[in-house]
Length: 527
Image (cartoon, rainbow, N blue to C red; front, side):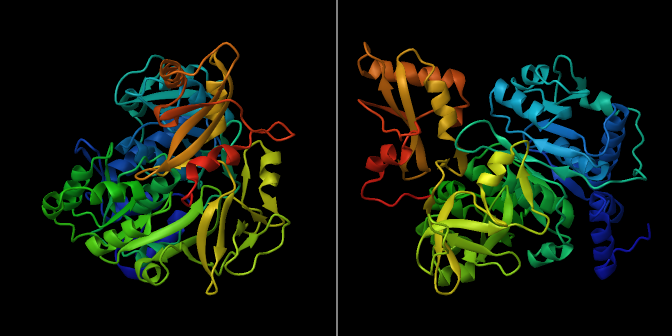
C-alpha cells in the first residue's frame, strides 16, 4: 500500500478497505503505535497488535475448516479480544453473533445452534459459556479467553505461531444480532448483504486523530456495538472499554482518557445527574464532543439537564436491530422540538398506520412503519412467518407507536408490542411467564412492565394460583426465588401480585394490556 496519510487520500483508502473488511489494516499502517483499545484493567493494545491478531484469527478459523459465510459466536464481556475477533470476522467473510453473556446456559446454547455457529470464543469467567458450548452441535473450534475452560483452546495458544501479516484474500464479513419477540425464542436479524458505514459519517460526528471513544455499555448490544466499537474501528479512534457501570468511575475515565465520543442510555444520564454536585465538579469533561443516546426514551427534564451540563453535544437516535430509516436529532433541533426523536428521513421513508392499515394524518398516533431498503433489508433468521408478520408492503414495524407533527418530526407514544424496557434493556414477558408457570402453585401468569421513576419500567408478575393455594408474602417470595433460579437476573420480576382471574382473549392469548392498565392509571406509559 502507498503510505498516504492525510486528507482525501486516506479517506479513499479507508472507503476501499471497508468494502473488504480491512479498515483496521489501514489504520495499523497509518498509526501502528496508537492505542486501539484499552481494557477495563488498563491493558492497551495498539492498532498494529489488533491488526496482527485479526490476521492470526482468520488463519486459525480457516485451519479449523471455516469458510466465508460461516458463523462465529462470542460470549464475552468488554475486552480487547472482542475487538480483535470483530476485526477478523470483518476481513475473513465470517458472520459474527455476539451473545448476551447474562443469559442462561440453555438460552446461550439455543443461540449458538440457531445461528449455526462453527466457532465460539468465550470468556473463562462466564460460568455458563462452557456448558452452553457443550450443547453446540456444529462447533469446530472453541477458544477460551482470559483463562481456561474445559474443552476449549486458550486464546494465546490458538494464535501461537500463526502469520500476523495481512491476509491477501479478504472478504467482507457480516453480523447477525438476536432480538426476541413477545413470544417464543430469540430471532436472528439477518441481512444478506453486510452494511458499510461511509467514512464521511465519521467526519460529521467530529472524529479526528485525537478522538477517544468510550464504550460504557455491553459490546454485544446493537447500539454500543455500532456507535462505540464499530465507530472507533472505522474512525481510527482509541476505544476505551468499561466493564460495568459506575457513575463516578465513568466521569473519572472521561477526564483521565480525554474521551471525545460515547454512547449512553437514559438511565446512565440519570445516574450521572444523581451524583453530588461536588463529585460532578471534580472531573474535567471538556474533551467531550459527541454523545449519542437511544435504546429507551429520555425524559425531557433529564435531557435538558444533560445539555445544560455538557453543552449541546447530545444526539438522539431511534432505530432497532432490524434497521430501517433511522431517526436522529441533535441538541439544537431537540430544544426546538422537545420529546421528538427526529425528522422523517429523506432517504428511506417512515409512515404511521392505523389498525385498518390507513395512513394517519399529522398529530394522530398509530403504529410506526419503516421502509425497507432495496432488496428487502432484513429477515428473521429461519422464521419467515415472523418476518412477514412485521411487514406491510415494503414497510416493516418494530411494534412502536407514535405520530408525526406538522413539521414531520416523530414523537413516540407507546408500544403495540408487549416488550418491557427497563433501564434501556428489552425484557420479553412471555419468556418470564414460561418459567413462572412451571411453579407448582401457579395456574396462570401475566408479566407486565409497571412504572418506575428511575428505570422507566420494572418487571412485575401477576399470578393466578391453583386451587388449594392461598396468597401470602411467603408464597410470593418462594415464586420469585423460583424465577431467580430459572432466569437471568435482569428478567426476574421485582415484585408480584396475586389476582383471582387473568383476562384472556377468545384465542387464548393473555390480554396483557388489561392486566397492565391499573398500574399505569393516571400517568402516560413511557415506551
